[in-house]
Image 1 (cartoon, rainbow, N blue to C red):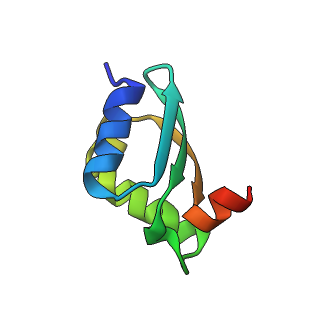
Image 2 (tube, rainbow, N blue to C red):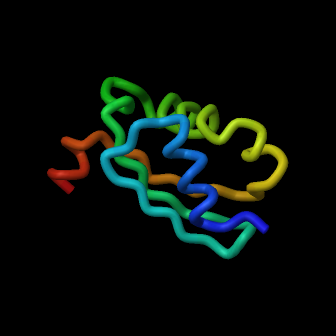
Length: 78
């Protein structure tokens, strides 16, 4: 079964994160992802970076992932 910890580890392996929080029930997950890599990127481009970090797991193991993607500056200014 996919766990929030394994989703978190997958994101961290492919994307440098200043903050990352993942919760979920094994199929549906919610993540708050803070990364400098998001600077200057649209919401869609940010999500594509996360999908790329998760690779095939996004298609095969994770049924739903709701994301809030922020730059460190956006995170600080909340």
